[in-house]
Length: 159
Image (tube, rainbow, N blue to C red; front, side, top):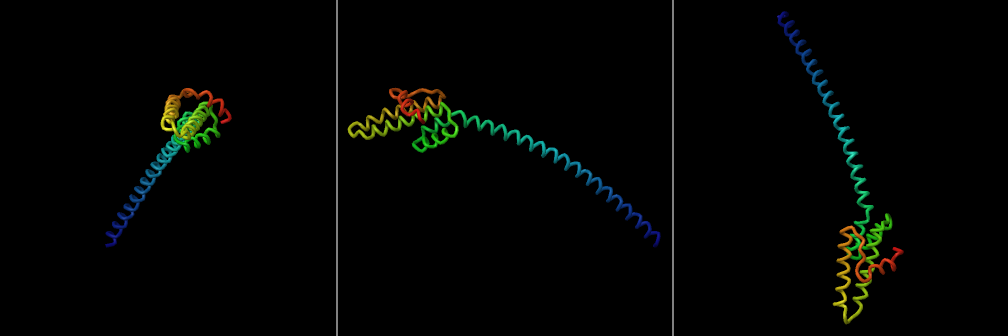
């Protein structure tokens, strides 16, 4: 029985040795995979930083061109107030031009609304001006509205 015990002990030692070698190979493989994963993660992070910087640059350019201020100014009184605030932090000629135009159109509409006899007919003029102004803002051109557009620019040049 001692021979059998010795053979069993030798077999067990061989199995333990094989298990140690297998564990070591598995550990090396995991370590290698972890290094590759780490390198891939670093590369992905660098790509993400690059894309974020590009997006930030694009966003700054979009916000600085004034066209969005001009369009927002046409969206109700609250939109006009938002456009004033946006334009005050980053003044552009285009944004200021349409802020003044819309202010003039709103005031003209208010005055036309005060005239009791012709107020329904008089509203056609400010609405037509508003549409023409919005079309100009969307096209990216500084077009003063008909009749009073140049006067709006002179009267409200402080804005």
